[in-house]
Amino acid sequence: MFALMQSSQVQSLHMTVDPATGLKAVIAIHSSRKGPALGGCRYLSYPTEQSAVEDAIQLARVMSYKAVLAGLSLGGGTAVILRTAHVPDRSALFESFARFVQTLDGRYIAAIDSGTSSADMDCIARYTQHVTSTTQVGDPSRHTAMGLYAGIRATAMARLGSENLEGLRVAIQGLGHVGYALAEQLHAAGAELLVSDLDSGKLQLAMEQLGAKPIAVEALLSTPCDILAPCGLGGILNSHSVAKLRCAAVAGGANNQLSCAVVADQLEARGILYAPDYVINSGGLIHIALQHQGQASGTITAHLAQIGKRLTEVFAHAQAEKRSPARVADALAERLLEID
Ligand code: NAD
Image (cartoon, rainbow, N blue to C red; front, top):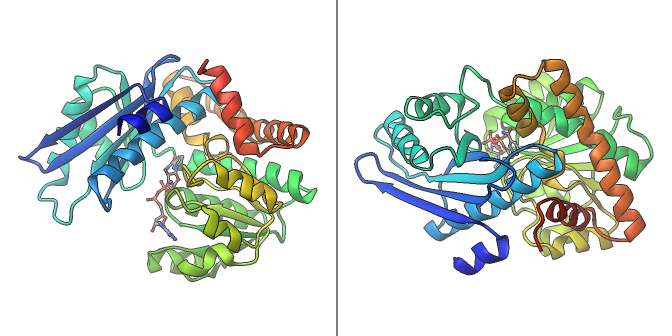
């Protein structure tokens, strides 16, 4: 665990248990150098407790990189609450988690992520002010999807020579808060949607409302398409899955899509353009941060559109340096964070 903390340059790890509510949670803070560590709070089941802690550590690093590349005065952190089969009282669980967040005195600010909702953030807000994406503030997923949309246009331009999405085949893995909002925008732009989700209800909705074509979960990655948009969980791109891809580019919202850094080189070797996840999925974070500062919605929308420009710059550097965009983005973020 310490080795992973060191290699991920995570500053601190905080853990708690509360037998009364069944809470088992971890908060990883990667960096507070640029400001408080704002990051998602996940509520998921994991194969082992160790894998939950590893997820928190890896995501905390990503949040720092995301914030610094988006020019935000924030650090990076992530919380993971371990989900068990039986939860007697969900509100009590999140209130207990809130008291844990409060002990960090503002060094970590919680936000919605996989498995949590604005209602959960409302529970947290009863015991600490260090929380965002409450019902009052709103779910940032729509803004994440807006940034993704701008990023997909930039990716299409860089890889296919046009940012026009009409008729483009986009395969979306995961139709959750982000994936479904992205699907709606792509549909409006005339893209052809190929979609998969573990939840058949979401698939049905996408078929009925967006004319999407359902693809079996296990077949999505090898489905022929122009752009693959992973919007489920991370780690889906590994040596094995990259060999099966039949797309020109990968541009999606899931955090930590690459199972390890060398996968970026494998994508590059296969001629598949990779839009670094923490660059293309930064829309929600940008929205939360700027809204918190009281910026007007027009300013926030303009900032979201910059995601496409930022990606275009990363792609240009990558091409000039003959390196993967993922490695270029990492180097840029590390330089900005002054990590040696
Ligand atoms: P969500 O829990 O609402 O949706 C995830 C969806 O993916 C679910 O519908 C789930 O059934 C589906 N899914 C999971 N594994 C799958 C698989 N193997 N095949 C097909 N479908 C699968 O989560 P979300 O808020 O939409 O976030 C999705 C991803 O985007 C996560 O990795 C999250 O960390 C990342 N992200 C979210 C935001 C945000 O604003 N919510 C911001 C940045 C990054």
